[in-house]
Length: 254
Image (cartoon, rainbow, N blue to C red; front, top):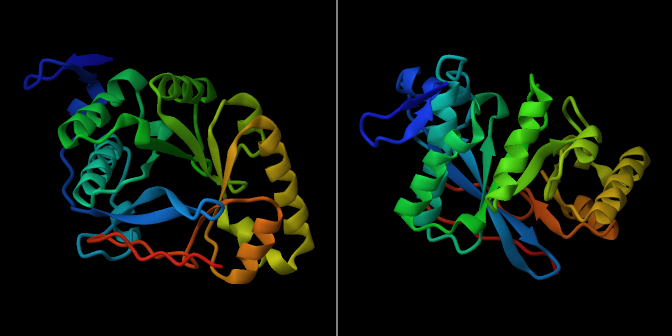
C-alpha cells in the first residue's frame, strides 16, 4: 500500500511510515573488496557496527518485524553518508533485506535521495542480497532485482552457497556478482572437496559473465588457492579489516 509523506509530498511505503522510529543507534564500517589483477579497490562493503564501533550483533538483535523497514532504510542512508564523508573513490556495496522491501520503486526513494544529497554517483552503488535470508516470495525478489538493475545499480548475491537457494539463484535471477560464503573459503587450500565446489562455481560464473568475490579470506594460502581458480576479487582480514572513522590500509600480496 502506498502513502504520501506529509513532509516531502512523495509516495512512500505504508510500512515505512507506520513503523516506529529506531530506538537504537549504529554506524557503518567500510571493508574493501580488492581486485588483485588490477591492484585497485573494486568496492567497499558497508557493514553495521555499534555506536562505538563494536560488533554488529547487539544492533542486529534489536531488529524485528516492527522496525525492519526503518532499519533497512537507515542502513542504506548511513552507508551512502559514510562513503561520502570518507570520500570513497570506488563503489560501495550495501546489504539489503529483501523481506524489508515492500515496493522496490518506493523503497528505493530513500536511497536516491541520500545519494543526491551526498552527491554520490548512483552507478557506484551495489546492492547485496543475503542468500541466507529466507525469502518468502521469490517472484517479489525477482521484481526487486530486475527493478534495481534497470535503474543502473549492480546486484550481488551475498554468502553464496550458505543459504536456501544455492545455484537456483543463478538460474532464476540475472545478477552481476556473487560473493562466495566464507564457509566455502575456509582452509580451501587443503580441502579437495571445497576446491572442486568453488572451481565449479567459478567456471559457471565465468560462462554467465558474473563476477566472483571471495569473502572472508584470512591467509595467504587461501588467497593463492582461490587465485589459482581465476578469482580476482577478494575481501577479508588478509587484505584489510573494517574501519569506521577512516579507510583501512590495504595489504596486497606480491
